[in-house]
Amino acid sequence: MINPGRSYNINDYKEIFLRRKLYFVIPFVLIFTAAVLWAALAPRKYQASTLVLVTPQRVPADLVRSTVTAGIIERLNSISQEIMSRTRLEQIIDELKLYQGELKSMKREEVVELMRKNIKVELPKRTAETAGYFTVSYTGEDPRIVTLVANKLSSLFIEENLKQREQQAVGTTEFLTNELQTTKEKLEVQGQTLADYKRRNMGSLPEQRDTNIKMLEQLQLLYQRNEESLRASEDRRIVIRKSMADIENPPSVVGADGTIQATKSKGSVEVQIEDLKKQLADLQSRYTEKHPDIVLTKKRIADLEKNKETTGLKNDPRYRELNNALSLNEMEINRLKGESERLRAQMGQYRGRIEGTTTREQEMASMLQEYHNTRLQYDTLIKKSEEAQQAENMERRQKGEQFRIIDPARLPEKPVQPDIPKVLLIGLFAGLGCGLGGIFVREQLDRSFRDPEDAEVTLGLKVLANIPRIGSKAA
Image (cartoon, rainbow, N blue to C red; front, side):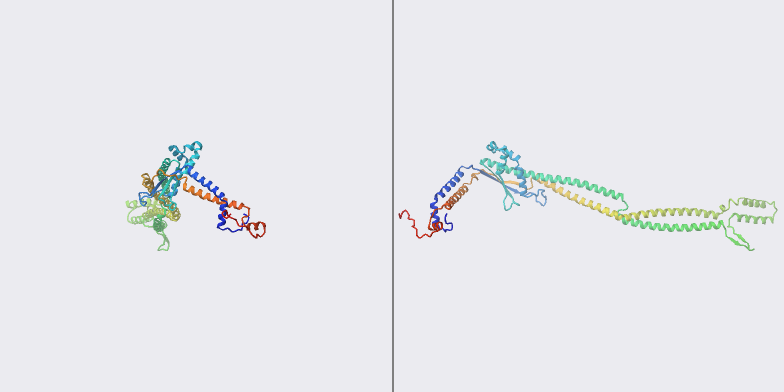
């Protein structure tokens, strides 16, 4: 094209089309003929589909909660991975004798991959997350085989769904059972540890604080009374010792003649000797020395004089009484002192228990909190284990969510590939596009003069006149 800035009208386009019509006809005919041949000779592929309904569990969820909580997409992906595995597809190929021709020229892995491409699992796009159904399709060359494979695949989806749900329910039950056993053993260990701690610290536990305080108050009261009794006994001992000292060392008195004379306690040996001497003097004033009373009195005086040193205070009844009282008083004092020591030891023990209660309380709080948490966990696991067992029984009896075929695959009546109308339409538009493109390219490469403007642009000269084209009829 010499003059790219030229404007065209409908007649110009018509003239260009007629001049270059071979550039349009040849590509159009070739492309459209190829599309027709492809539609006529391409191998026919048929597709069979099975509609599978997802039915909810038959037992109300308020009564039994299912342990399978995965969504339909997640479960379908998992089931699809299992069914479309190499092992499962090889089993289907061998069972239904598929791809016999391909197996002669292709590797087994390539045949499995080819079959995997021919399988399609589809969910409704708008409600994929909450879909209540899905379709399983299979594409192949034999309508009968295609129908068998589609039904076989849908049956595998149903079986695999039941198997996976039961396995998940059983796995959940086993896991909770193991966790329950572990938690039970942990709870028993903590309970035993807590019992040993209470037994080891019996008497100083936090719940025994009030009892220990009351016991300490009672011991303090007993100790106070015991100390009062001890002081009274010690005072009594002082009095007894003073009385005995007075007997052993009687006080001196001033006589009528002005001399100091020691007084004798009544009943002492000196008093008896003095009385016997007075009696002897009285007898001697009346009788002779040989009188039996005088002889007996002298003998008694002599005996008392002889035993004076050995039977002095010991024969004094008052002294003996005081000595016995002193012995009993000493025993009482020793007893009271021992009782005081015992009470002080007990008070120290109860003070130690009360002072240690704070530490025990902190330790007990930590142990009790841990035991309480484990107990709550154990109770929760018991409830979950029971629910998991119910869910497992529900899955075993096939009362849970299931896949059910509501529209089995039927023998396809027409192929899905090739799509003849689509192929012909594509060939038509491709031929038109290529023909018009050929005209455009050829016109762009043309360097000849078609009008005065082309000559003016190329030669740079002004055209004064031109001879119009004379049509064949005018000629």
